[in-house]
Image (tube, rainbow, N blue to C red; front, top):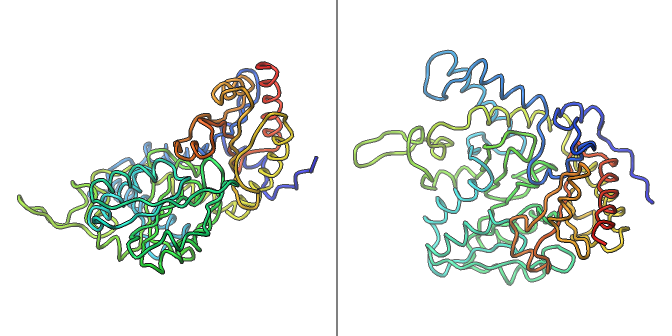
Length: 413
């Protein structure tokens, strides 16, 4: 068996930062292997969230008293941190939303309804999460636009040989995931964006799985929109981000109407606030935004390149161990083209049964269609079990997964 390389991360120190990891489940040490669904939170983020509610809980952008000004400053500092994290040109391009899903729906409704018409085409891929599929189905039905799809090949990669054929003068938008939440496939976004620009199409990237795990530079990628969630990158739930090019955001109508997003309101008409406030109607998730800012601090201190390298080492180790289990099938491309996500099936055992048995041995994994039913149909599997890794995952947890799978095989044989 290949020995896993010495990780660049100080796993003992990192794991000490995550209080939830130090417990037992059903008499076994917790092996949390579901970070693709939602990551765990370091004490730094938890403390930042509680500190806001304990010391300076107040609404933002409205009050001239000390608590409100302190809350506003902390929230806007978080916006600046996130802008630097993805190399945005301006913090005004950072829109706070609830999650990746809302970010994509914002673009679909605000940009899509204003710009799409019958005959226009939207290019997606067959590996998209429902969050980057269903909104475009709705908008296509509402505007008369049509959907095209980049196929997935037998190795779990996007089949890009026919990309130039799929891209036409009628293609107005390409919306594609940066990293598949099922296969772990990391897609060549810069190349896709370059091809899209050649026909004048905008590019939206679902970065829910990429931004938490490796360096994402929106300027280097040459894209127009990026959507991601805080809860997948050591931040709180209920906070997400939409980055968009300033000129495009300025031309888009609002997504939601109400307080904070207006410049002037009259009985029969209103004018809109400047960016980013035009798209942040109502009271935002203040504490959650502040917490996300601290999560960005935490990840930046460790280093995104180091996180990605460690996850690839761990994924290589996990694939070797899993592929050695008789009757177990894994899905997805080679390690060099993927992140820390492994979906698999055990012959004769439903994915939900596998997950239930693993839980009895302290291993937390996800089972089901992973909000990717079209991709499941292509794979010929109604469901898979999925193990996913993050900066705090250890080789010993992979070993615990393998032992539990062998016991699962014995139970169902």
